[in-house]
Length: 92
Image (cartoon, rainbow, N blue to C red; front, side, top):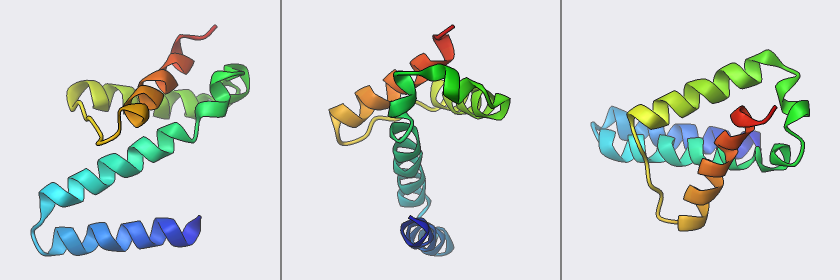
């Protein structure tokens, strides 16, 4: 996992350093999608996720960001999974 993250970071940094900001932003948006999709198991039991207040704070920050800057991936299933992840914030 660390190597994949480091690899993605290097790709993004190279794109930024060459002025290719559009592709760098696309890479970061895809990385954010992946981070949200990993939270899918918490949809079954959001109470575990909510035990740590910083989890909620970060997820709210991401939701606010995506509200301000909507993003669609190349994969409809990803977009649905990402949208569903925000349901954790609505669970009691």
